[in-house]
Image (tube, helix red, strand yellow):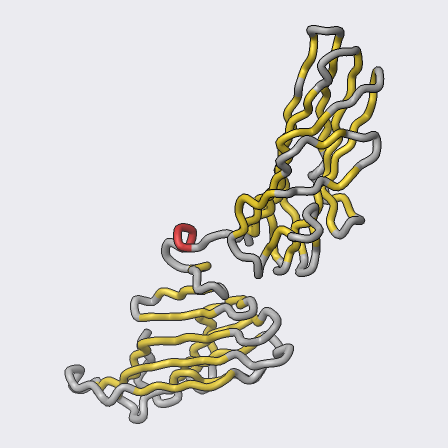
Length: 288
C-alpha cells in the first residue's frame, strides 16, 4: 500500500456507529520515501490510538512534503468493545473518499494488514478467520456429550441426561453443563451445527410396534426447526425383532446463555412393552 505524492492523501477508518462501551484500538507503521531518490528511506514512523465512532480517524498520514511517498508497513485494529463493530477503511485525498475495506469485528477480534496487500481477521483465540488458508487455520468450537447407559423410553418426552463429555474444545464458547447434564450451554451468539444419534433396543420377547420420536429444544421451551425425527422398531414373538438407529443433523442460530437439550419419547402403535434408547449422543458445533 503506497499513498500518492500529495500531503492531503491519508488512510482512515470509521465505525458504523458509536461503541457500546469502548472504542477500538489501532496501531499502524509506515515509511516515507523520497520520490527523487527512492534509495533514501526516512525514519520509520508509527501511530497508535483509539477510534472515534462515526468520525473518521486518520491512521496513516500523507507525506510531509509533496513529492515524497508514504508506504504503509502495518495496520491493526482491535475491537475491545463488548459488542460487534463495523469498520470501514478508506483512502481520502482531502476531497474524495474511496472505500478500501469493510469488515465486521466481534468482541476481542482484530483486523490486520501487512505488506503484500492481504487483510487478515483474527478471532478472540488468535485464530485466522479471514485471510489466506483461513479454513485450514481456523478451528470450530465443539462439544460432544453422550449417555453411557440405556434410557427406558416413555410415552412422554424426557430430557436425555448425558454423563460423559467426549470433546469440549472451549468452555468459554460452549460447554456441557456438569450439574444439569442434559444441557449444553451456549455462551457465544453464532450459527451452530447440531447433531444427535442413538439406537432403539427392542425387548427380548413379546409382540409390539413403536416409534421413537426425538427432538432438540432450546431453553426448555422451543423445539428447534429441523431437529425432529421418528424411527420405528418392533418385536414379534420370540424370534422376530428389529432394532433401529436414529441420526439427525441441522443448523440453527443460537444466542449467548441459550441451553440446548435432547429429548426422546415413544409412540406405542401396537402392544405395550419396554423399549430402550441406547448410545445416545449430542454434538453442538459453532460454525460461524
